[in-house]
Amino acid sequence: MVPGAVVEAGVLRRFANDQLLALAKLVIENAFQPIVEVGTGAVFGYESLMRGHERIGFESPLDILDQAAQSHQLLALEQMLASRALAKFATLPDFSDTTLFLNLDVRLIPEGDHLVDSILEHLRKANIPPSSVCFELSERFDNTSVPEFSGLVARLRKSGFKLAIDDFGVGHGEMKLLCDFPVDYVKIDRHFVANMDSNPRKRHLVKNIVNFCHVLGVRVIAEGIETEAEFIACREFGVDLVQGWFVARPTTLLNELKPAFPHLQDIGKVRRSTQSLDEVLIRKQIERLPTVFEHESIDSVFDLFRRNPRQSFFPVLNANGEPRGIINEFHLKEYIYQPFGRDLLKNKVYERSISHFVDRAPIVGLDADAERLMTIFANMDGSDCVILTENMRYAGVVSAASLIRIINEKQLKTAQDQNPLTGLPGNRAIRDFMQDSGRDGDEDRHFCYCDFDNFKPFNDHYGFQMGDHAISLFSALLRRYFFSEGDFLGHVGGDDFFIGVRDWSREELSEILDRLLSDFHDDVVQLYSEDDRSAGRIRGLDRHGRERDFPLMRCSIGVLELPRGFVIDDLNRVGAEIAELKKLAKESDAGLVVRAFGAAEERDLPVGL
Image (cartoon, rainbow, N blue to C red; front, side, top):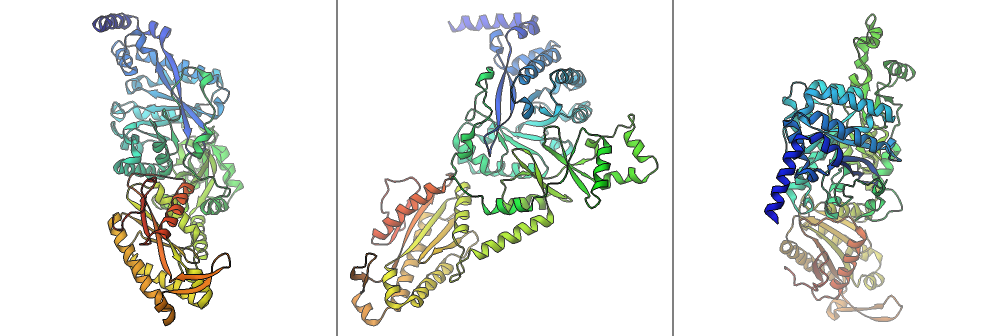
């Protein structure tokens, strides 16, 4: 059966080689795979993929494209595929708000004008703006080595099309493309995304790719997302868009396409009823400047600067409302102040449109935190602003002065959150530390919840001043033992404290915590009277108002371990585990329980294990 099938496929393929285009028209279909916004789950666009090639003996889309190139039918085949994809795209009810991603084979670059002409004609007939189409530059071959490449890119940009680098990280000259050409999107190859949640090197690479792309004003798409953990990791590192089987498989059936996958925004997240502090501060400082569209005339820019004499730049958008960059007044001054300068700009022979004067600017979503905005801005020399987007569309800009105000106000709010007795950060900072640490699985992390045992009867018996003294003693011990960069100390309130550490082993942490508990017990018993110390107990009222004996005060610590490679964004689950550990620690003889997240079968572990 197998040999016969191979022969049959070979015969079919040889026949298909002679009639490639005719057969392709009969059997090849366009499948659409959704490309989805990470933060909202809304569908941003679709990549058009080839299906049906196996029916005429080709194992993969690349096989049939290679054969078409050898038989000089590649342009005709690609024109046919593109025209069908556009026709299909135009039937979608929301096509005007989405983007169609089309692959551009490097072998077509010398004939690129013919392909662009045919696509522009289809767009005109379907009333689709060119900004709704993005060409993916495949890295199977070196695009930049083709002499006609620069001219084709210039034409695509002038026509209003968008550009993406496909398979970023595994091909030829991606950094050259990013450096020398106005790219809108980078698609990170599946190789770097696969198992990223458990691979520190991949996470480090993806994190840095996202950062430098955003500095350059380029949005990032992660390809081949197949697991929930990969999706969460992409979201944490600031990836803008995702596609892959975890979201949706490619389909040739339009009725299977959804406009959104709203459940994605809740995966691994805590439901919040209010905005974060960073969101509140950033939204307060957003300046929604007037914008110009790249397809508008130069006259519209002159008019905008004339009506806003104090403004030196304006954001430039494409027809879909996505930011392309900014246009600076100083680029136009040489034309404004030289004789016939404005007439020169409008001259059809000279052909200078708004797109010729667009400067790249950092672009990032509104959900970025303040520190990330400042880092992005600082790394973009000479930038006037950071452009902010919501649902990938222009939301406003934040200037350098506004960023400074955001950081200063955040520092002030953080200082106000500090406990006045101990000077340690309060609940907001503790929550932020846990959130950030839970999302970053590059190291082992430990969350330690410290709670005094028998504090209330001591405080009732000796007075609140002595109670405050015990609290101050403990905070001083915390600072003595946890002083390295990256160690976090927090004061939950009253006699409850929090310790957060990264890159400590369980053995190292258990040894230090054991010494901390011992030192605190030795110090705090000195606060009791000699008679009470000798008795080893005091008389007091419990929480129900009943009088009974209480042992001398000590501290219990429950430690939750998040192992390297484990990523979580759900603080409710973290809090539930810590609450259970706190109870176990109070019941234990040593007052210390350490347990890995989710290891419910582990009970009271010996100190040091």
